[in-house]
Image 1: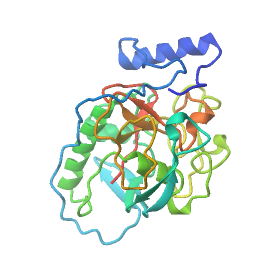
Image 2: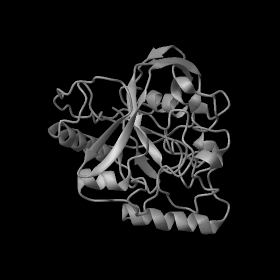
Image 3: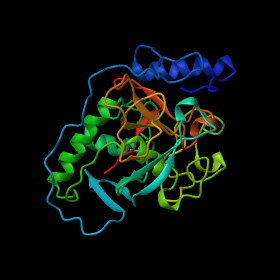
Length: 297
């Protein structure tokens, strides 16, 4: 997915291939470049946009953390006050530059990655390889996540739980990075919530080669868990190999490309890949045992 992620022991490579075949069913592994990087070749493709659903009429009386329940499964959405931040990094990978100014409006983001319990409550099935109701769902493509989001909106609208003028969706890449950095409470950490990776992230140095239940590591400045490590998280944006240098407000990435953005690193990834500025991508129809999602609202 990124460079420096190949494990030196052939045993780990064999284990990874075996686990991936359990998810994909055909033994196919994600395309990598010579640095073992997730595909990053922006080319023209049709955008699979999130289908619109009717707006709810529930008044949004206050901007604060909200709890929602669907089919008996509850989850929290943390209020992220908008603001300005410097997006990207000068000391990371080539696609993290140039560092540029971004301004965001208020939004909500999931306290945790979407769990298997929540996915099953909405979709009626659990595609994950590493089973556990509190573990993040994995083996889900971007396209499947869009279907999940639409069904979640339908269920919560019917239950009268959606705030006025808002619907669940995937976060934009800028929203994801701002939240991972701690929003307007940011302390400038390298990882989401700490400069000590093991305090906040499940990665290949401590994961024992599997996912773990959410909220077992330290939260970041906003009270968000597992934004570094555990599973990669799909973002809304199409991927581009680098940023524009101009200041942007509520950016949504390029209009088309070959792959969608992934953020956060995963249980089988190195520490470099768990940085808040690190980027990955895969085509929207691809699944992997280390890819899940986090909701925005």
